[in-house]
Image (cartoon, rainbow over all chains, first blue to last red; front, side, top):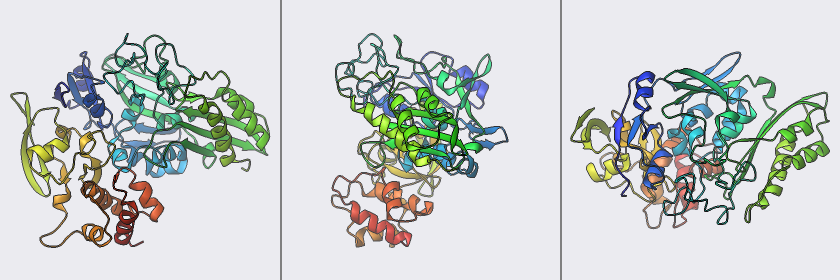
Length: 329
Length: 157
């Protein structure tokens, strides 16, 4: 490999980390499962790697108000945490469907949310990609675009976000807790990510040097046992989603009183299916309602040459996820 | 950790023995094990986290050494395929792989076995769980049925 070498720093606390990473070219390293392959593929070229793995940000804390996942909690630890399994099964399910056992042991919550797209143009340094090299063009727009976005794309980028966890977190209305040199801020996960527009090199609203400290998930006990995570992929395991759906329903006396749906593999960010949610609220939890919600999921979808099949696939995935939850209490 | 001539000097435990190493900051754990410490049982297949041939244990957990930055593992206890057998006795999984003919070319085998060592500790409940949990280890020869049988035997399934 001929990737340029980088300097290494291991700050002893959050303030030190924020200072070290404020410099352009600095990047945080957590599990390394995306940073190192991207560096080897010359998709990124950090000049300084700030190793945050030993910061005290790995705790998983359940309170009455919700669940706080430390940014450095390993995915495998999150998926087997008793509180997560008991009250936030959607999160455990999303993680169980992600990557492989080895990678779940390494990858962290924060790193998972910040992983870059699997678009082949982004990960091949000799192909055009506005996300990797602004101004070089989007190879996927008129090239290989089977995995490209149905929603939220632009003329400069049609890449999708690959995280399964982010889809579950979007359904549960999670907030990202961000530390910066001027203090702490919280943003809903759907506002944490940004659409590519004409600047696809920035996936999120994080500024240089800002650090994800934790992810807060509002209490989801009312959805316990009433959620479904469905991931459609090209092989049975260890593969990214072609389409995924995370659903949560609350049904009272046969009527849907609350519905949350998000999809993955179809947009530059976890994509809330708000039209489907509206089609469910106040309706009986029966097949016809689920079918109508599935139909609404693809309102406004824009297909390219090779990804049109995902429109029908998304409808069927939504219908199936809702059927899996079913109508009973 | 010390910094010297743009290199990092630190210690970790490899197969039970403490080792001091001097590496460039961008060295992966895989290259440290193979090129600096001379243990070539851990294989470099894809070097992108896809094939699992570089699987080792870090503090008892299976990881992909090609995705691990060596410096991040200062002080960790790393176990490779060379650290499994005790004197003349093969590890039960090594013996089971031989018994069940769970390989053809053998290149993926060290990674398969290291992954399986951790999987046994995770407690798979049936053969489907073994297949799912071993999905991070590819075998280009397609020895999967025998790999699953070898692991199932050691897991008591």
